[in-house]
Image (tube, rainbow, N blue to C red; front, side):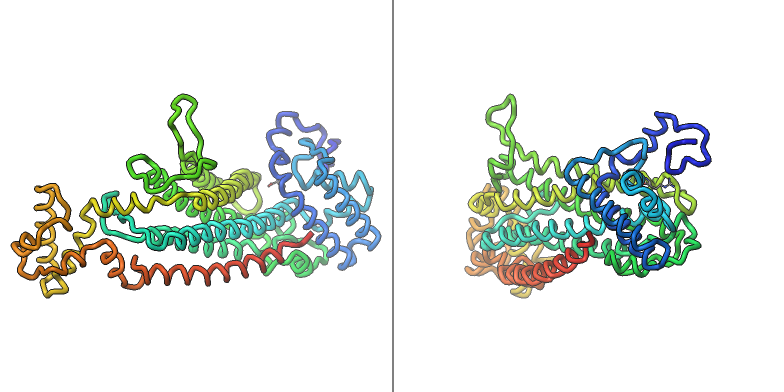
Length: 474
Ligand code: ARG
């Protein structure tokens, strides 16, 4: 007979290489807190249902708490032989307290156990990610508020397009992060479902009380279908997809930061503490953080693809393929949290070169739309105004000057509608403050965004605090 917890029907011990191949303890040990919390709730339920004696339950509880302390003090040695975190803990418990320990797995399978642990782990991770998203949002709001009047060229096709407020540009990222926050809230809602009690796949013959376990572990809902409970990995797919979209946002930001701190742009300067140098070129100061975040985005997107592919084509219910859900998930959690935290620092430490941005706005034609809008206000149809403004730009290019340098006489040759006030109309400040349509770049609209952001962040904090409380199950 094999030594394994499931060894009864086996006449040989597991091949050593196979043991190593199929073990998940190398990574699922991260879920020890969830595993212990789940077992404590399960044991309490078994006792309440009269399936386990009070004495056995007390012994299990004490034994599990001892194991928790051992793991946290680094005194627990994990064994590959015992495959995963579930059997490592159960075997240690049984070694410590005897028979009572071997009653713990009553009415439970590792299939619903691992599902329970992973649900709790993801729930916890989501709350941490929400906190990190909010922290980066805060950094954007602070930097935008500290640079309220800074004007920069806004781009389309990476060509200077129209003058905008730097704060408006930063707040676009705030808004992207707001959607990320909402998406992760959605992930939370669909992770907050209790699978335990599904057994291996079909439920159990014993009189368990799933609602009791759900309440103990602060789950909002219980899986209605046991087969769905053990084979659902949608919440992991959703986590990975929300994480991928978030990383794509950070990657776009990275690309801009990298451009902005290039010599060619020089719009911002990163803090020395946030950059690295070159081993050969003494002058270099490289934006590694942004490059790495851009690079790591591929990794997270890859984890999503790997998981979608792993689940595709799986018959119900549990299949060992599903063990592949954890490594990519854990890596995505770490990557997202780290990237957000690093970016909050980077944004806060960034020096904004208002002078350079201002210069960039002056030395370009990004006020050409405003010149056309000026003529529209004087009654000219927009298509015609567009053409006149284009002719003014062509004239300037020919002479090597900017729109502000063109004489009133030259303007009036292009259209009799031009008057002295055209110069005021094409000043960068005017261009910005006049874009006062809702959500536009004007000072007023940007201030509106900053106010709304403060309110939103207060709501976000309330939600994070409430969810943090719900996580306290150990
Ligand atoms: N380590 C496994 C996993 O992560 C636990 C469930 C295994 N169940 C089983 N019957 N082999 O998926």
